Amino acid sequence: MPINDSATLVVGSGNYLTAPVGTAMPADLLTPTSPWANVGHTSLEDVFGITSEGGEATTIGSLQNKSLRTKYSARTETMTFTLQQFDTAALKLYFGANAPILPDGSVGVPTSPEPTQSAFLAIFVDGDNHFAFYAPKAEIYRADDMAISDTESLAGLPLGVKPMAYGSNVWTYAITPLGGLLATGASAGTPGTYTPDGADVPATLAALSSVIATPTSAWTTGKYVLLADGTSKAYWNGTTWVAGQAP
Image 1 (cartoon, helix red, strand yellow):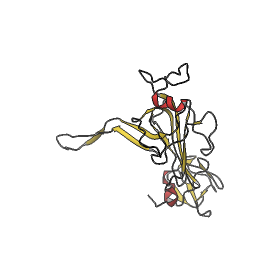
Image 2 (image 1 turned 60 degrees about the vertical axis):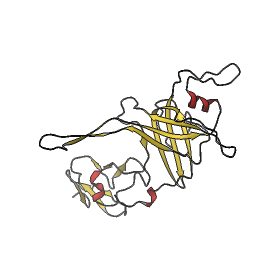
Image 3 (image 1 turned 135 degrees about the horizontal axis):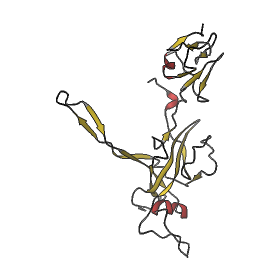
Image 4 (image 1 turned 45 degrees about the vertical axis):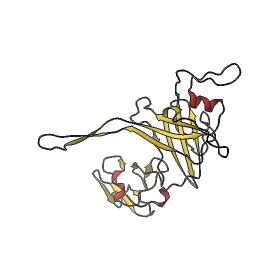
């Protein structure tokens, strides 16, 4: 793995948002639009964390090989942050989605609380960089007991967000990488193009090894893609990437 200075992160600001279950991640993470809604003020000290349960390793062996395989149990993860607003919406996130609004406007604490189900998005900004966690389906509920310990700092509601599998997804949440988006595909042209849109152009021929060529058959005469220096060319010969343009 090469050293990539632009892939480091120092959080300068951030936001946590919810939307109906299944809502897609916004195209512009810096200006998410409806139905995404900000949950409110959050802690400057306890910014964000991920805890996990499960994932224990069990070594499975045979008579011939005592350490033949390793099997891991299912792992569940919880994202945590502290909400520092005590309005109705915030209280229902902490005490339960089924917390009733009483006739006097107060929020009742349910005897059998139910977590809030929603899509969840956490966005962190570091100068010109931004970094996000996205779950199309998650359960949000209290992560810890509430305590008001002094009169000089903002009180908070510790929340836990459990990402859940949505639909046929084989993943529960996604993370946007820093340091550029890797190219996963390359289409023949003069020059050709990389996908997804906005992906970083591979710097070397070796960096093309994981890029899928389109078409997968040998590229026709004159076809190529450019490498990051803007002058070096490469083409797909039907088996591997080769320097230059297709003969």
